[in-house]
Image 1: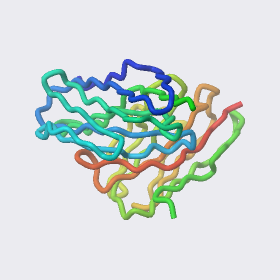
Image 2: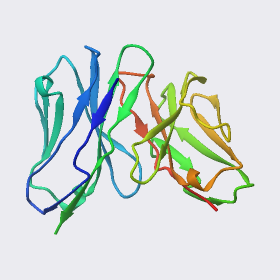
Image 3: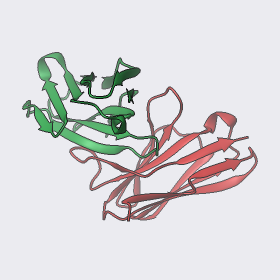
Image 4: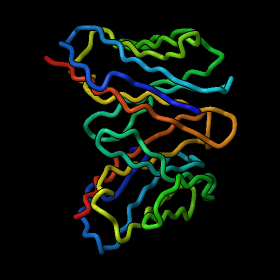
Length: 115
Length: 114
């Protein structure tokens, strides 16, 4: 079975603090893709990043960074020096290549950045 | 112009009404999706279309009826809904179905069934 767990339901931080959003996944597939999406109050999910299972290199994009560790089946997302505009719900998702098409989302983590 | 548009943004309907949700993508994608997002529940995939053909129906009740006349347009026809169907309905598209493609979402239709 495939599963994505985001154990943190809601996180509140003060502006300029760093924050890490956790994502743990389960899959038996050897080839799979992991994604992060941001859902601001306006409603639409915005694609942030995709990683494939063969590329464990961490990635940094501005204040965002992602730590992919196959050994712990985790794909965590860190926001450095958080800003109020980062307030949103963040979803981790898993898509695998075998069998019936599956695109599994986690339950999301609501991030509140306080001024 | 935004990539994926949805209309209406808000809809209130009675349990005996018939209404339709519309989604249009301007990204040249081949796959389109309907999702249901309820409070405190994971995003639920409802239907998937690839090149206008339905490829996934995730055990959705028949009171929801999708239609995909072409790769750019997707509809969700609603009839005799229940109050528990109240939710945010999101449409998405991707270049192709399945990995590695990311999905692009519309802003959603907030549906309230009274």
